[in-house]
Length: 79
Image (cartoon, rainbow, N blue to C red; front, side, top):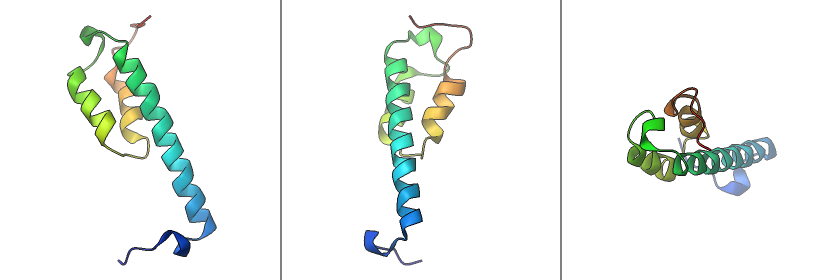
């Protein structure tokens, strides 16, 4: 499959890319801020691994959503 330049992508495709990018960035920022304010005991798995993954992997919002839904221990408020 040949790569398309930005000019070759239809408007609906461009809109989808922009929305997914904004969603991923927003969820990632939320997840990283939440992670920064939690103790290690309040997180499922190693905090350093979550931090690296959230900071380095672009996942269209899947990885931040996984952290927010499964990476935090239930019933624990970080405030």
